[in-house]
Length: 247
Ligand SMILES: [Fe+2]
Image (cartoon, rainbow, N blue to C red; front, side, top):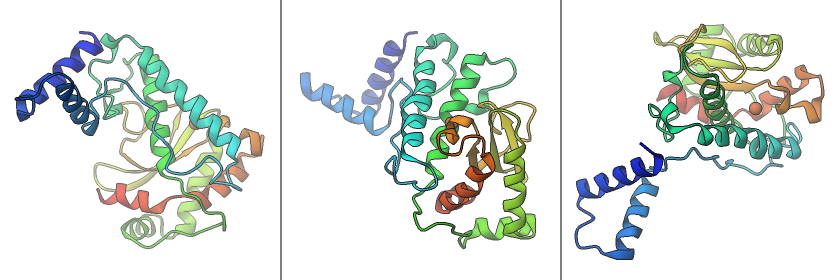
């Protein structure tokens, strides 16, 4: 079934269910459908999410040009490739909930790479926040207590996370995850894989993500990944991490 046809049926079914189609004609009906579908985000297309800050707002730690290229070129490319993929290959996915949990070793490379790329970056942007003043330590909250309980101290956690990020060979991501048992773990994944996928990684819910692809830092830091990682700690949006942990 084509995307347009499926979209049409979904919207029609929705109108029928909630009875809003009754008594509306012509443009009123179209407006009602568009209003409902947009409020429920029923678009059949994957879309690039807007950043919650400006491209230059993460200066001096991540430069404006890197952010702009990373978002409008790299992330946009993952979105475009997903939308170009024949719908028969992604019928089991809902663009509104990026279901990486469906990805396994049998999934085609184009979906695995681009779905991961879209999900990982969408999450990564929300885990950053401007902080021109510089380094800020872990804020208070449940995640702070859980990190100290698991890693003995925030400094231990920071060191282990930084060391693992530094050691990723080539392109990949470093994650803090909450496992099914509720434990916190630091894991790394290659390319655009993530810990939600049914692959050979420790699985769990991502709470914190660091992109260590060169495209995330090379313009400013060149080969000095260690400096990029150290400065990234200044930009973590701990409110978002807390929200994901307590969800
Ligand atoms: Fe990236």
